Image (cartoon, rainbow, N blue to C red):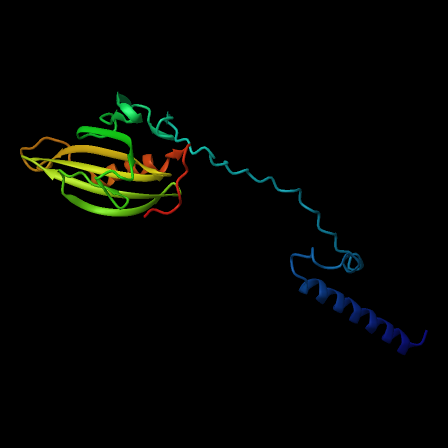
Length: 229
């Protein structure tokens, strides 16, 4: 072999080695996207496919929307199902499906109660979709969406000698009538002041509880329209 051909061969081999080395050096760490024939040529081991990852199955929400620690009540005369904290008890059943519950286990104010009844459209206490007590001045009116249902809320409060009586009057349309949830409580106006040892009325906490109760009401008869007047 002539010296010139030997030198050319050596130089060619060195060039190929430099090219391959540079190629391997410049290769990204993740070689899984490169063709397998190219990796085989470079004597690069093919990446081993990791086993299929195991994903945690998220907890499926309760489609019945049953709140833990609460009791489901059914009132067939009113055509509704609703839930209340298990410590709440029914204290009075009246004609036409009306029912009164004692809320003292969950409301730390005076005489807390819930009165549930059906209100026909012709009821004189209805003002649009709002139920108005003639004896108490209004505080506010609100249109809400609770549990996917349109709800009207009338808040009224009557002040006496150091005590205020407040009513949260939620109305839900049910075909040809309204279902009324009347939450009533009384609280000391001066609670929290010096020389008055009584629980301070927490309006925000109380309102959250009432909204929760109304949001879980299910109409089992009537299924009124989605819109209120």
